[in-house]
Figure: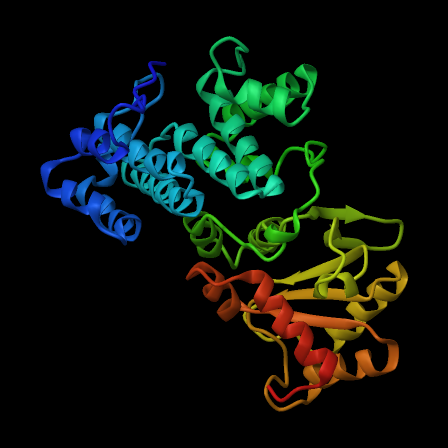
Length: 380
């Protein structure tokens, strides 16, 4: 694939080079102090979804190249937070194009630059995650043949992050097999990442990224729209995805024991001083995609599961919440008694909480506040 990025040179200002490729109406934005936020608001309207769509086997569209270079402008100027917002907006626009056309678009370009932005920010876990999402995209487009000579994802994963050549090829083949089996689901590389193993997760979160939280809102919308399925799989996948977006949180679904099944098992890695240090190494999640609140019985059974795993913390994902909410009765009362009697904290995530995350809320802060309310028995 031809690389059509600007090759920024030192003999001319970055601003002048960027202006040359921008539409005339966008050029004044470059000189504004809040240029990145203005570009973030303006680019989606200037370049509608279908104008940045990249079909299988095709080169990047001109508008996609322009958008890409706006992000690279901020990355080159050592402003990675602003670059990340621009590349993330391009990724969202390309996902929206998929929805409108009912056809997969290759989204490796914004994903690999999001990786570079996270790397510049000193966020190793997020950087690795977005590079694996890039690998998912490239594996489909290249039909599992990731070339070390022409692929940008190869040297980044193998040279920088220590993934072996054998591992990369195995993941690439697994991704392409998933694409052939379930192409619609593979429109979202996040879905693919939930289907492969997590042996690639070797980085430990840096202190500065511990509280950072970023999700694919369109993927959450996709999963949220599927709630209410007979077996509750959509809620489990949604819960698993939100938890996995916490740096250092390793998740697995549908773990079976000789006596019970765990909907989601989570393990935390690398945190020492924030509130998660009190959650323990492992915690368990239960998912109830019901049209009624979870009752006292559900809390009591879940408490027994936490006892058997020696866990100090657990999460119940219940679409309609729990009984007694706001009145400190029934199931909500039992959660307070469980902490007072056994020192275990159970928090509940309902559909309003999912909508909060969908609208850009930080899931880590949400968990922190819910944990604090139970731990200190605060007013609701």
